[in-house]
Image (cartoon, rainbow, N blue to C red; front, side, top):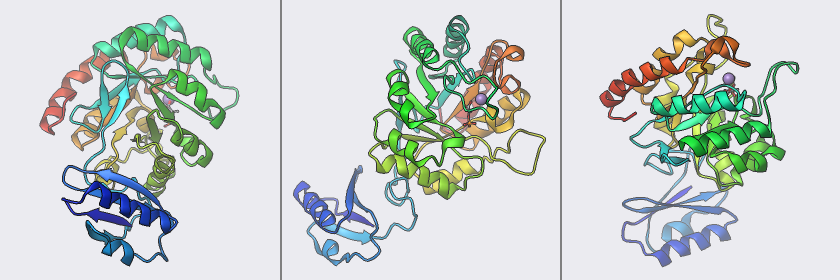
Length: 340
Ligand code: PEP
Ligand code: MN
């Protein structure tokens, strides 16, 4: 349930509400809004008596949170959350400015990565993506460079100021990846790896959470809730396409998810049209469509020589295409009151 405080409620009254919540065996989560403070009482509140809270000083009303995800829900926080990406460029997801993250599917070698990072930066991106630990369907496929890949990404950040976004696949990699990355990506295959969600929730770097290939929106937001309930509010959701009967594309990219997430959650949501389609020729149009329907940003696979990319070349656009895309995206962003 959430306790909505009166606009003139004092700090002492908020503290008293927190004390009552704790006495009920629940945990508080305080949201200080522009007009009033809201205190969410988290935990199983089904048999809790809310009268005490309703009668406490400074309380305007007590309302149940109907959604099973509480901290991620729009019921608890009306204003959109803005999640900073890190890096020197000051990018974020959820504000007026779009979060544009681009780079190779996997980090392949130092020179190529540094050159590509510069091209991505010149195109106007604020984030550099690149996998050092890769979740591959086949155990024989390239699995990523591991820590060496992370070092290369960190060097690219030092050179360009781009925020580094890279995947963490296991609990025992969280500390290592966290030392190099600005944003930790939890991949689609790990969206319901609850131990991993808790581990990234217990560290302070922002998390890019990708939707599982067969996850409902409720499951997606409950995965975000795991991270938030462990103390990390900085979750960026990512729609990356789902598995359907359709096979003209690698995945089906359901863009209606973007406005729907904005309706039910305050978290930012970005779109990955690369995994979402599997085909480079579809990526620019789906980027434009994603921005047009309100996405808070894009994560795009980009490679200077897609034919020879070690992973996901077929869905990687070249830096030249990215630069051209930037021009048209600026117009679409302006039309929906955003900035590239
Ligand atoms: C990726 O970003 O390269 C990736 C593997 O993403 P996903 O988890 O969405 O498949
Ligand atoms: Mn990929």
